[in-house]
Every structure is written in structure tokens, then in C-alpha cells.
Image (cartoon, rainbow, N blue to C red):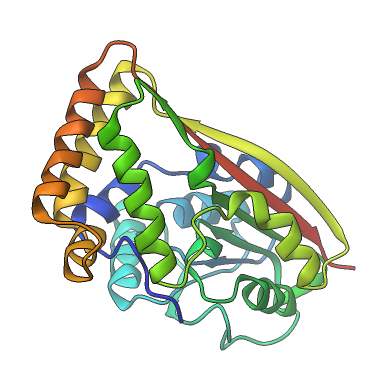
Length: 266
């Protein structure tokens, strides 16, 4: 099992709460029909899960995550949003404790980049998907991210993230590999979709830069980078200041490319 690079610090989990079905699963929305059964894999703090659940209601929804802490956060999110009936469970996508052919939609957002065997994970998602159903997965691609101005501190951040993520057994450039992984997992009817997040409006730029300026210092990624000799505390402080400089630049843009797959089950 790969180690989750970001960890569960509030600078991480709090930043995920802006995600919903529209901005993170647009490619899959036509499959989210009322009454369909849904499994959300790697649900994290649950903001996407609760939105998906409302779209497929009254269909049954199960949500799993490898982190017990994430599951508790997801339950809290569902309570806060008044969404009832989601079955939250701690589980491993490589070996789901769920029966074959159980769900019409199996969804995973930003999961495959963090697992030790994404092909096995996709095959397992296919196992629990019902004939006529679909496996939907989307992951970002770190090497494809681009920003302006091209500050050296952000270049250092990218290099550091790549090293830490790969040391943890993950694949940070997952977006470009999604189709290949799906084919290797045995799927034949696959649609690949390119999507993008843009953190480039003044509001998004301020939020994204402030979040990363704190996250690089406080999250598991930063702590691991120092502990394993990838960076020093001074390096992290410089990266943090670079994020602040970028967020304050009126010309600042940041683009996150994402690769998504829809795998139909015959």
C-alpha cells in the first residue's frame, strides 16, 4: 500500500472541501442518474461524495477510504449538508470488501496517483461494477501543471513533490496514464476525457497560493521531505514564500490538467 503523500492535516483536507460534482466529476455527470447505485472510492472529506449522493438519490451510496480519519470527516460533511443514508467504510481499493457486480457507478477522484498498483485498483473497481454500469476515475497530472510567473520556488516545489510522491510509491503524473492503466486492467470500452482546473482568477489565486504556502510547512509532505533528506526547513520556508509571491502577482495563473476515464462494463 502506497503512503498518502499529502496526509490529513487541515491545510490538506480543508482545501478539498471546495470540490463538488460539477468541478471535479463533470465528465461523469451523465451517468449519475436518479436511482443508480454508487460507490465512491477514496472519498476523502466527502464533499464530492455528498454531491454525487444527491444526484443519484434515492439510489444507495457507499463511500470508502483507506483513512479512518478521512471517513470520520466525510461523515461530518454529510451531516453538515443534511445528506443521509451514505454507507461510509474504511477499505482498500486493491481488495474491496464488497461483492461482485454491486454498483452501477464506481467513482474515484484523485485516487490512482496515490496507490501502489493503479491497474489492480481499477480491476477491483471493475469487479464491483455491475454489467451495464461504469467505472469513472479522474486524476491530475503534476508534470503537466503550468504556472506564470515561472518562479524558481514553485519549480522547487514541483521537483520536491515529484520526489516525495514517488518515494511513497505513487505516480504524480497519473493523468496521462489513465487510459493505459484502464486497458491494462482489462477494460475495452473506454472514453478518455481531458479536464482542467484553473486557479487563476484573483480569488482562486489568493486561495490556492495561501493554501500551499501553509501546506508545504504543515502537511505530511513537508515533514516527510525534511525527515528523508529531500529538503531542509529553510527550503520549505523559501517555497512557502514563493507561493505567497505568486499569489500576489496580478498576472499569476496556475493550471491543473486532469485525465479522466469512463470504462463501460459489458
